[in-house]
Image 1 (cartoon, rainbow, N blue to C red):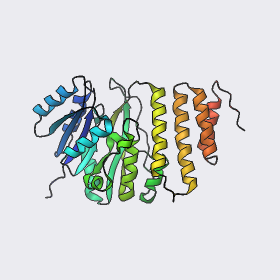
Image 2: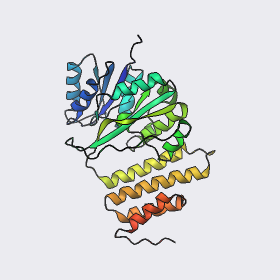
Image 3: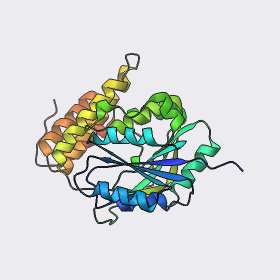
Image 4: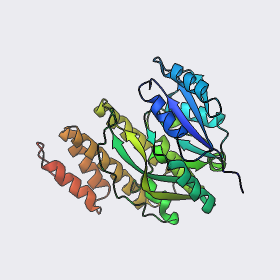
Length: 304
């Protein structure tokens, strides 16, 4: 009988004392026996480091803790990857929760399909108290392998970080998370694009994790994410790519920003973003629908 491949849970934490133990325990209670947990305390000023040390004492065969000066999410994930010994790497942020079958079902895909470099699944959203915010979507990854890169690039398909499991051998080929996106965002989509260039992507149509939503300064977050998304287009939009694809990508970013601004009641910026989406790709009905939706708000839109 072949030995089951080791899976390394990549757990960065910065001031996450409230949820860290629950996250780590969700990795330790998987119905898959060969899991190690690498917790990187990224310069926390709360009790996160002490909680991580205690978990390492309680589970010395499975949990290891690394302490470092604060370097951001990208730096913490890359440190964890450098210390991991698993053949497979699985992302688990310190406030998310894996369901018990997440690793076993993911590993089964890797064992069956050797060309697959990334496996992911569905999530449900929870709030700070762990209450479920939504029913799981019936989203099915509809993209065939030949289209995966483009559909991720155009934001038509998404990979939930809390469910992402990928081969170390693929990371050895494409490199670690890009520090240019540190403290900005989109470092995950950048990674999925690079992985999809060299291997297949497999979606499991089942809920594998609970993803926690926190209150934050949404306006600043939207601005930062918009900047990151544009940066991603500039990085991956090669000169040989058809201009139509680039325009579609820009439109998708503007449309999502419009939706986000509308969600926080900033209708003026939502309208501006929607207009930019239409100008970037007027043939996509989704852009016009978003513009019409914003037009129903307090801002009167005049399209020339």
